[in-house]
Image 1 (cartoon, rainbow, N blue to C red):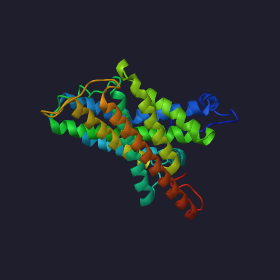
Image 2 (cartoon, rainbow, N blue to C red; image 1 turned 90 degrees about the horizontal axis):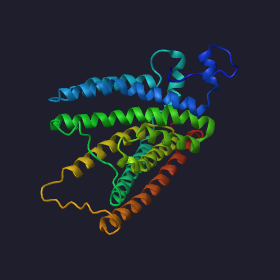
Image 3 (spheres, rainbow, N blue to C red; image 1 turned 135 degrees about the vertical axis):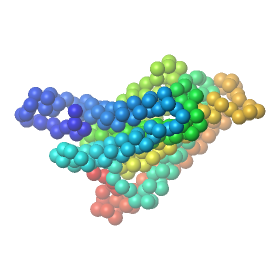
Image 4 (tube, helix red, strand yellow; image 1 turned 180 degrees about the vertical axis):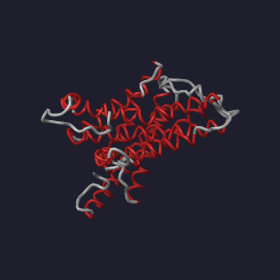
Length: 305
């Protein structure tokens, strides 16, 4: 299936083209996004699994990096067929941004990640969220472990943002607007991360919130580039926190009591509230910066296709 199929409203053409044209835009976008997701993941996942069988060195990092570079070139419009080049570039919407927009985007996203982290700790004081470090990574040598965590995180940032906030969300936006697009994509994003453990199901709400944040950022800036960086960095940060929680330093005091009686619940809740307010402030400043740039670029949203 091509990454950017062309609809045929007249009903002319082959049977697959006519069938595709009859699908709702949301269904088309979901299928295209799924294709982009699978295309980016299938070879790196095979290399990663092979590396686990010979873990002395993180040898898979180089071929995975090459694959991701080639993948990014293609989904951003390069390569054959040239007839879909413009559509691929438009649907990915990975336009460059000015240094000022980059700064405010990264600050807003970083504060959003910090807010979600505080919310995770707050909810974790009440219920189990099923957070655990992947068992397959635990016995790896330190260098291999650290390298593969970074590789996995970068892969997730590039591929998932390209698939969900790029190809999927941008196509739905053009037909149904940003609110519907962000809502639909966030549900599909959560379903793509649906856990195998029942204990982890409550975490789905946090994943939806993360997707909403990335979706708003992509729409506001007209580019998924900040989301790619933030997504990758956020995953590395999450891996690190989970590892530290499962391997506390000698002598560290670990409180596992759950319930409103745990004072850390209230402390983490206050942190989440404060960080959430800071995130809203940063997003407001980002919006102001975007409006100022729009006034100097013929009223176009920076990075918009």
